[in-house]
Image (cartoon, rainbow over all chains, first blue to last red; front, side):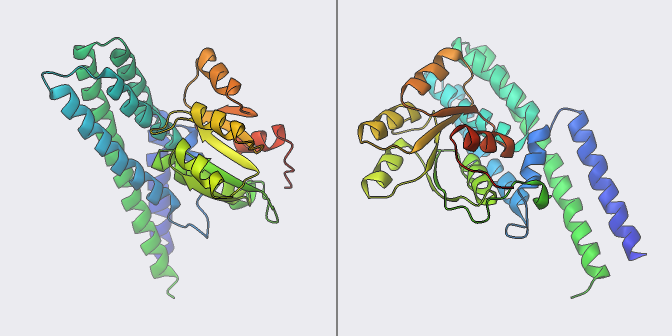
Length: 154
Length: 134
């Protein structure tokens, strides 16, 4: 009975991941990230994703502040922030976020302010969608671990 | 999952990760760990230079290109001027040929596009004649 709960949760996790891969939200680099998790770092995926969230939110806040400034002209700074976002999104397999950041970066290279504002909206949208999905994944994983723990009490 | 990764459990190799991005620092550090390569992490080219000035030396340096204070091209040139003969592999998201060429000409031994994966890292090690035992 308890094993059935673990199996059902694992099936939910697999279904969510399959959906995220199918939507292009994640790519094979996320599997690389999962492969690095082991006994010496059992929460590696969770830790790295949380570093990604912290860093990305700082960068997105900074981008919004820059673009909201009426006197804004520092497109180079926008480009530097976006290089960071492209890099870290690629590293964790966040394909859609990475791709919209690349599009945003193209607008900044053309000093296109309306394009940058639109780009920022799209990046924020994709980022928040990813974050919500990751939270759902971690909640399912936590429930699965708890269910497995109940089955095999220490 | 751990069994699918080539292991250098007894490796005596050492490496330095030079990257300002915290996500990449974590990933590259862990990738090297999993291959049995002891490694340190610094945040920019200046810190990479400083750590060598303090007397540390590494078999392999994974050098990011875009970093504040001192970027990967500047750091690679500086390390070579200092006589550092470590193998330096550039890792960057930049994909334009002229950008890669500039980075290679700074003194790199190899180059890989990010994101770095286990197979890309093993490829770097093979290209640089580091022995990989599985």
